[in-house]
Length: 213
Image (cartoon, rainbow, N blue to C red; front, top):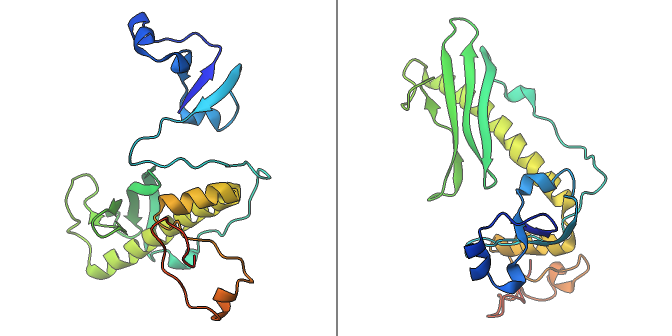
């Protein structure tokens, strides 16, 4: 994300000479800086969109608060305690590790969290606490219980992030999100007769519209 502002441009003289006039005076601003406040002297924002990226416009802050569903502790692994996590959201996908300690003998089980692109799903391998290898000192039943615990927590994390995203999205940004997800179909109103089965669903035309969505 870059922004045109009245701050001095740190680019070199050679860079400024090679840059078209319309882009002179642009300075790069980290996206995280725009989450809490707008930089002073900001005139316009420009997004640097790569070929495999999509711009989501029309986002709003909403009311500043939102009620979400908490993690359900009935999924907690009996006899194991969550004591650490090293997690990040990598392009919206959770990635990292969650650490559990056995309440009886102190064994540590690390559950990896990663997105597996070929099959398009999250994976939760049970790993050695510090080595890049599978755990070897836990039974299948223990692994299954701890992995379910981890899945339930990460599932809640993903759901809460998605709920917040839908809350701050306008109709314009919702349409952009659907299009970026490969679901850029025609959006039907609740009273559309096609939803009542009076008309057969139509496939999407070459222009990207016309199907039930």
